Every structure is written in structure tokens, then in C-alpha cells.
Image (cartoon, rainbow, N blue to C red; front, side, top):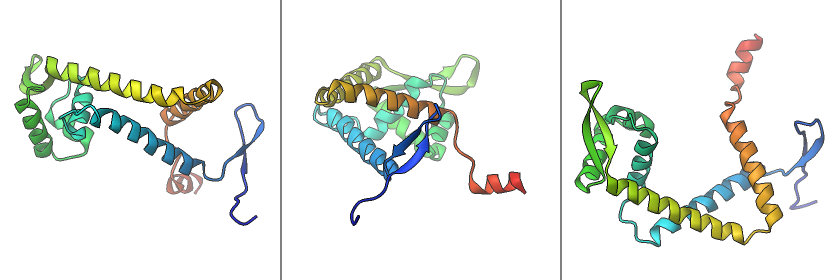
Length: 173
């Protein structure tokens, strides 16, 4: 059995025993890297002039319209001055505006311009086409199984993280 690893057995939600590949996390990581590569190539091959970090900032602001610079800094896990400089660059390229918050004029809200909304729509469409090209190379049954696996993974991830060993030890002590 040199070079082969044994499968582990787990119980699914229905109580059935199922084999789990020994390196499932490794396989998922490799697939995630391939997925990111597909997404990145979809934008780079179409000569998007906005760097990936700035695209991410635009997407964060699109998804959280109430965001200010401090909130953006928290989302990016950077200091507010770094987030502000990113906003300066996006503002200079016409993709972002800073506007007073109507509820508290001391606050400044980050707002996407029409050009940013258009850019994000184009990037999303290119990425969807690139992913669909890969999916089209997969058999329909594999596509369906992938969909089910991704939905299950998303649900498991959304249900929270497992407790750390320290948390478990503290509760049992």
C-alpha cells in the first residue's frame, strides 16, 4: 500500500457510513485555487485596469452600501489611513465618491459611481462566463454533484465554526 492512503469513514446526516477521501481538505484547497485562477484570468485577459484589491473594495462597498472608511478598514483588516488611501485612488479614477451620511453629517459614506457599478457588472459577467466554460467541460452528473456539495459546504460554513480545543476543555472542566 505504498503511495496509497486509506479512506476514513464518516457518518452522513442520514446515519449512513460513507468513505471520505484522506485529503479532502487538500483537494478542496486545490479546487479553490483553480477556481480563483479561473476568476483572475477572466479579468486579466480582458485588460481590466483596476487592481484586484481595488475591485474587492468596490465589491465590498457595493454589498454594504452604508460603509464608511472605518467600516471598510475593518472589513479589509487594515488601519483606517490605508483604507482612506485606497479610497483616494478609487475616487481619483472616478469609481468612488465620498458623500455626507444623511443621518449624521459628521460621517462620510462611500458610494460607488455609475462607472464602478458598470465595471463590477462587466467583471461579474466575465467571471460567470469563465466559470461556465469550465462547467461545460464537466459531465452533467458531476455538475449536479458539485452543486449539491457547494450548497452543503456553504450551509456548514454558515452554521458556525467548531469550538477550539481550549473552548472544549474549558466547558468540560
